[in-house]
Amino acid sequence: MTTNAAYGYQTFGASANPDQGGSSLLPHYDSPEDYMWGTSVQRQIGRNWVITAEYEGDRGIHLLMPVSGWSLNNVPLSDYHLGSKMLDDVPNPFYGQSQTFASQPTVQLYQLLGLSPQYTQVSPGQASWGKSFSNYADFQIQTTTNHGLTFLGSYAIRKTLTDTGGKDIQHNGTSNIGILQNPHNLMEGYGLALYEKPQTVKLTYSYDLPFGRGRQFLGTPSGFSGHLLDAVVGGWGFAGVTIWDPKGTPVLAPTVDGGVTAPGAAIRWSLADSNYLKNNKNYSQQVYVNGAFIYPSATGIFQRQAFVRTPDYSLGNMPFVYPNVRNPGDFRTDATLLKTYPLGSNTSRYLETRIEATNVFNHPIYGTINNDPDSPTFGGVNGKSGSRIMQLGLRFFSRNDRGRAAQGRPFSSLGGSCVSFFDCLHPVRCAYMDCQCIGAKHRDFEN
Image (cartoon, rainbow, N blue to C red; front, side, top):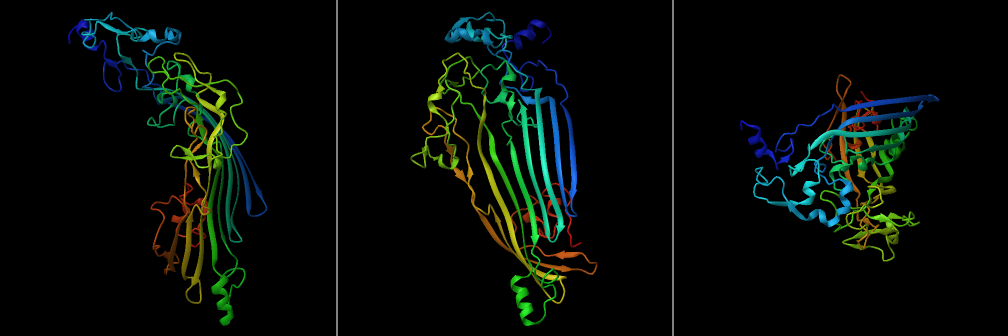
């Protein structure tokens, strides 16, 4: 191509997306920025306990986000009143002037209503238009080597407002999942982070019972009865992790199935009554499987009569996400019960047996809430899963000449890399909170 006319003929009508081909209308990318601030207060209680209160704020601007659902050719909100007329065929002003439109004497009206009607679509694909604002608070209490007890308890509160799906461009934001009624206005999708749970209680703990050889009681057993008692009650310990999320992730407002509106836009349901929740929100009683509630008395958590189908080519009065409805939370405890058997007169060589279990209390993991008012299970919880998994293990421990523990490999393992306390070589004697599983350096009290 050597002339502007030839360039225009080649590019007019193409998909003007610099990220995926077509004519290159290069967008302006700003560097993502994060501004963080925080404070922390810590106090020691007695000799072995420490409490900590922390706050952190985070403001992100120019965050990278996928915006393939946004286009300069989205129909302006002021033209929605045209209704179905925007789908009428009208003369094509670009007929014969471009490669794409050369054989199209007519086009649908909506094609000419956008800001760049000579293109079928104009979208950067991705852009640094995202932003976020977060507040976090965390309260901790901890102790280590306190009469055999190692404990860390934390309660975290968080709230994030954003229009992105995360720091990674691969995480879809609200502008790219078909929920905006006015795709031109990306701020319509700015609100509660769809991935965030507002509260978390986490307990990590390990405890060596004070009975048995080398411990506070029965530390030096003698005679047949002493060794028998030591074999029965000595050497016991346990370790565990308990995580409780009282509430789950936010629930999206429903879009109208079969609703007709401007191309690329959505229609959300409307609320005729602000009292759209029932008093009883017992999720365990609202589970459905294969399109039917498990319990005949279940009717979902929503008041169906409060939801009104929004007419075509108009806007629902609901925000894109419920401000006060969350999917079910989670509760989980993973634990180990173990016992050591010294070999010989000292504790340098011993066998360790253990029983390990994930989800010890067999607590169910509930699915998400059905947000479709047209569904017979509207407001129900989509199934449940979760099971208790147990295993038995045997390990041999011995000290080498240099005084470090030469530890045998277990006959079985619940994981490869250190992703849970099961993978620590010795979770009771290990400084469990400081293990790689929690994010810091692993260390062993025996060394």
